[in-house]
Amino acid sequence: MSEPSIIPAEKLVEFGANVLKKVNVPDEDARKVAEILVESNLRGVDTHGIFLVRLYSQRIEKGLIDVNPNMKFEKLRRAVGILDADTALGQISTLKAMDHAMEMARECGTGTVMVKCSTHFGAGAYYTLHAAERDMIGILFSHSEKDVVLFGGKKPYLGTNPYSVAIPAGNRRPFLMDMATSEVAFGKVRAAAHAGETIPPTWAVDGEGNPVTDARKAKAVTPMSGAKGYAISLMIEMLSSGLTGMAYGLGIVPKFDDFEHPQQLGCFVQAIDPSAFMDIQAFKTRIDEILNDIALQPAHPNNPFGRIMIPGEPEFGKKEKNLAKGCTVSATVSDQMREVGEKYGVQWPG
Image (cartoon, rainbow, N blue to C red; front, side, top):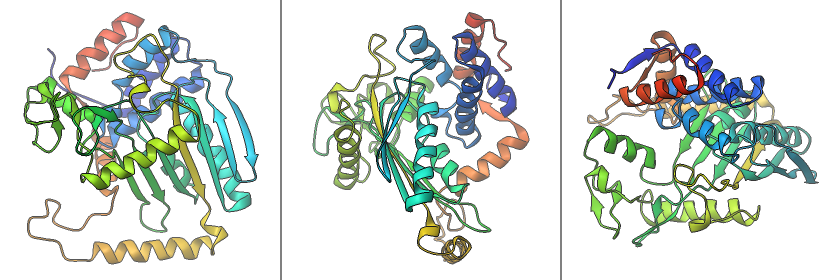
């Protein structure tokens, strides 16, 4: 096994784009997908980073992701629409959905797009920040394959069902919430299992719903905050499936295990234009005031950051550092990416 590698973000983007182009993804789309993946590496969210090009290329080769989809957007009412993604790369369809939502929000104050027949889109933060950077509030959530036990249950049923919100600010960075509705993303458990590390007993359960600390025995993760996280996750499941007609619960295709069927996911995408309510600069100044006031509140002595942090702030800080020094890619992922590169004739930069 190789050692961890420190690689400039642009080199990772080039590698990812070149691999995707080898499986016939159009140049512009390949570049955009790679940028979105590497944005996660920059923010320290490696479970949604460059390593996913391996999965995507495999599913493309099996015909489970369409690299030349016939996506269709239907505007159902002035501020509501549905996008049929036609099993496109999730990054491309989700970004398009947010653009449609923002276009409607500019006219109506808000726009909501449901995406159907979609595939994995990576980390939700990219799309909500895409809205916040354009003075919009971005909201995004989606269901996913069964990784999470129901509250009080034994077997996995819900997905980690991610939920992201970004709110623009003035002089401060945007408020950014991007989280799984499980106690942790299952990717963290997989990473611990590969590294032979133990996990906290609150993270995951075995096949009978019993807590485990050996990550290799984990069959499902738990909902965050017990019943509260379960309720939020179920809400996401019902809207993502109920408003799109897509599968739910046990019917959702597991992307890492099933290479015969497309995922066909549903996704909720919304943009809100603050200027529909008040002057946009006044709104952003108000958000600055709130965030500044929170940041000045006293921190507990055991606070690991030494001060009160705003949601998204740690990841913004990691991005600054990683842009300067490069992204650390684990030995396991480096080995996997080297194999991918050898398969497609693309040099791994690590």
